Image (cartoon, rainbow, N blue to C red; front, side):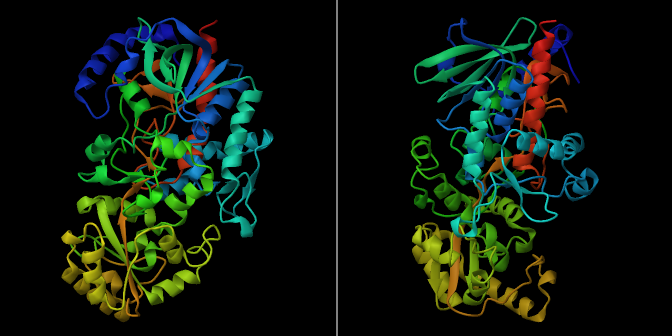
Length: 528
């Protein structure tokens, strides 16, 4: 659905009223006060300005430049790539590019946006390949490809992810685009009709204005905003670990709401993995200074992804601080993680025995080459907490004595829970427990010492709720009309996923490319 600035005028009054109604939503309203008095004279003028240079923002910026736009890309960090820099590098629609089949597995997703991603995935791969961005099939028949190509096995279990992303940024520059690093978008600018005509940004020298015919919000999600986490995810979600670059505070969503944008569905679910706790081993990479000073980005991948319970959680049992199982471990790490977030203090313990650990040692997926050897040994080497004991009874006592929240841990319940689980696992009746254990990995009795407990906290890599958009990536107002000149892609946009993930980097990428083209078409229509 396209819309010119003239078409927009008739809805401007309703949108203004909608924006006023949203002023009470403190968790998502308000931008930096320091920008409110910025001079209106533009320091930069362009056709399209893209706020955020993650994998989706890069696709949007290059797409707009290819369509003939004068494009400025602003990025808060000193590096392009966003949280995708941390990824293993395999991306694609998780359930395949046939939307009917994918929708059957992700039925709470937005059907129009989901179909858009699936239908455009093949052409997206052709597009990036045509620019010289290397991809490599993950495995025959897999919907995933490795960005940058797969590394040799001796170099690790990931692709040349960051090299790919930095090359993407260079391609944008080669196509005539301008990238402003260390620059944060803080406020949208509108004209008398309510159309978006640029934004206020801020760098080390202070705030300034970028005048533009259209704006694309690619600022990512809101997992670094603890107030929003608590409001939308759970009462203890402010204790969660944001597994992302430290800039994802929902700024794009807040800016959109200020000009009358409508919110999507899906604020209650997210993507991430249980994070070993306490997280002192992160050594500050989860704050701005620490992240900007990282010399080897693969180190961040290992800490947030390569050495977490992501790969091993289905082989033991999870208990909460009350010592009770609360989730079917066979659901997979991302869904287990969402249940961890709902527990007291967003906390849980993964209980393993030596028998399960031996399975982990001998399972390539669980001991990926990026870690090498024994993953649990590697966790200990990195300073992650792993409690070890010769019996389950001793393990309970050591959890209380050795973990920071042990005072609230019910060791007696944990011992009884393990006993009940073991009896069911031996009898082959684990699926009939009050909290069933079912999945690809069968229930394995925890009977061989030593025994282990890994404390975890819920982690958030990507949020699913954001600004409501249509299939042209136009931001929709509270009056259910597109806001002229304003576009957004996930995670600033939301609703494409709900419940479980299936298209994080691939969805951002496809919608980014579409957004660049549609925002440019709108900008060019104003010159006609």
